[in-house]
Amino acid sequence: MRRQLWQLLQLGYALPKQLRHPVTTDAAHALIRAQLTNRAARFLAVSRQLIYDNPVSPYRGLLHWAGCEWPDLCQSVTTHGVEGSLQRLRDAGVYVALEEFKRLVPICRAGLTLEPAESDFDSPWTTGAAVEGVTSGSRSRPSRVMYSWPFIAEESAHELVLYAQHGVSDAPVALWYPAPPGVAGVHNLLMDLKRGRAPVKWFSQVDPARSAMSFGTRAALPAMRWGARLAGVTVPAPEFADLDHVDRVLDWMHGRCVLRTFASSAVRLAERARERNRDLTGAVIFTGGEPLTDRRRAVIESTGARVHPRYVATEAGLIGAGCVSRSEADDMHVYTDRIALLRSHDDLLLTTLSEHTGKVLFNTNLGDTGELSTRECPCAFGQLGLTTHLSQVRSQSRLTVEGMSVMGSDLDAALADAVRRVGGPPDSFQYRRASPPHQLDGIVIAVSARVEIADEGAFVNAVYDGLRARGPGQRLAADLWQQARVLRLVREEPQMTAGAKLLTQHSPERSTIV
Image 1 (cartoon, rainbow, N blue to C red):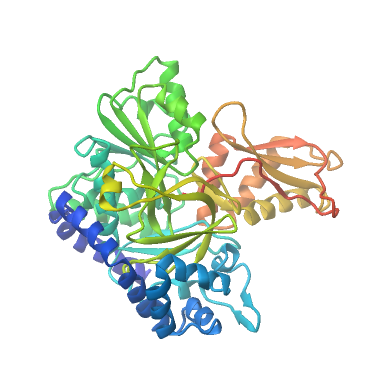
Image 2: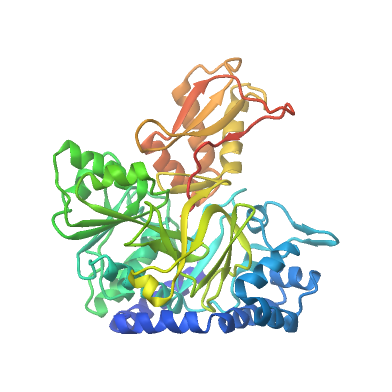
């Protein structure tokens, strides 16, 4: 309680100053160019300050185990560059898998075992945080991420360039993200405030009056609105607009405007607009939460709106955003001035290059796969020197539907508990992603007909309740999933692999983590 009160006081006190000094276009361009020019030096500085000089850093233990001391890393960067050095270290065993980062398993290499605490991945420099974010965790242990004001300012520079290149710098903006405890809405709000353009609306898929918030979380928004008012800025309060009340969002969208939301929410909005014969020409929608597939893009843009993806992870912040000269629906520029990205055995490994990061990432797998390429581009990002492109971002280890992500292990545990309660054996179920003929994903939970389920609706609700019990992130996901009827029960025998092992997750179409 004391920490939360202190955070709220800092937030309300710091916000007016931040809003009086928004990021300008010239400053944004200068910042990105400078960070690209000094990229290798920034990588080494972050490695020294946040890893080698941090005795509890698990990356420090891995680097020492691999025989890579500070002078060795400096020499490697001089010889092989940032990505070249990271790839050589990855091949030597210096990386952190998703399960290791989530602390589901220890970090084990030959002759080395590390069991880090959740805070050991935090930056030791994170003070005066602007906001605390919480990811969905496993075993009821969500990851805590602190966003500092310098970190938000860095991200706002990229947001400013993104808005400018799509011609909507001065367009009215609405957010359609869950109210806290979900962090996406607050994160997007702070970035817009720092770029000098407060959203005029904030729609929430969950009812702010009924969400399970702690005192600190419940008081954070009033503190932010109070602090902004001192700077003469009006911050909107979240308005309830769940998936059954899409019209509330649609009625706001007239002419030139911007909506930021999950990809699936944008599809629902587009389908409702077509039912009402609404022309959304002039609107730009920035999506995240799930892949912006060709099918989704076609449905959304059939309304006249333009849609572009953004790639964000709670642990890393902004990673990339849609190219105006894109070659495919989800073609994005990677923000290589602040992130190093490797593709290793189909996995994406992230390394943070900013000293303002809340979570320190060094060859860290957050569960995503994707395609990387390098090419010149005439768009604003390309002209600044951001030539790395990313597409086909998917997640193998997390399930993301309706913009909400949970670990597969969490759904597995909730489903196992529900099956156990009705007397079913542990090998009598599985789950898999399923995309219906339209653009909205779902999850099939397949339970053997041998298991007696008297009330199938009650059984599915028990799975949702099992997810809610595993932590605040899972509770938020369960609320949105139940509202969207994501889980679909079928009675069929589980598929078995050739080794007679249960195929717990069958995923012909993967979901993104953003």
